[in-house]
Structures are given as C-alpha cells and as structure tokens.
Length: 120
Image: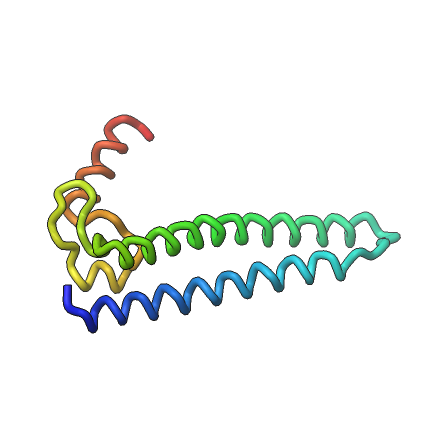
C-alpha cells in the first residue's frame, strides 16, 4: 500500500475515533444531568427507554472504537490492508467502505456463507 494511502486511512480512523470518544463523553454528561423526578410514570418510562436506546448505541460505538484502535495498531505494525485469512492485499475500495475490516471480500463472503450454513 502506498504511503499516501496509509496516511489517508490513519487520518480517517483517527478522526472517527476522536468523534466517537467525544460522543461518549457527551452521553455520560447528558445522562448525569437529567436526574429528575417525574410525577408521571409515562414520562419516566419514556426517559428510561431513551436512555436504554442511547446506551445500546454507545455500546455499539464502543465496539467500533476497539476495532478502530486495532486498525491503527495494524497501520503502526505494517499489516493494515492485508487479509487475515489469505494474507492478500484488501482492495482500497473495500477499505474506504469499511476501514476497520480485516478480511478481503472473498474471504469475508466465505466466512459469512459458513456462518449461515452453521446457523450462526
């Protein structure tokens, strides 16, 4: 992979990481600032449902944060852009669509077909 491609992906991943971390901080501060008493149980239930949804979203984002950090580690150790299964280079188009990927299209397709056959 070319140096300018590596720089592009490092910058992209770093920007996404910073954005996700900022959102996580906002969520924590917003959740602690809305400690109110609701006389109406429906209002309280609505607030709780919103909080649960937000926590599920942040959990998904937390998993993405971990994947981004691993991708940045792969950039640092020179393995970014190589498929973990076949060790071939992952296409730039695939990396642009999903920069945290660790599989090329062919290997990911095989993995998904195998999971489907096993009912996972």
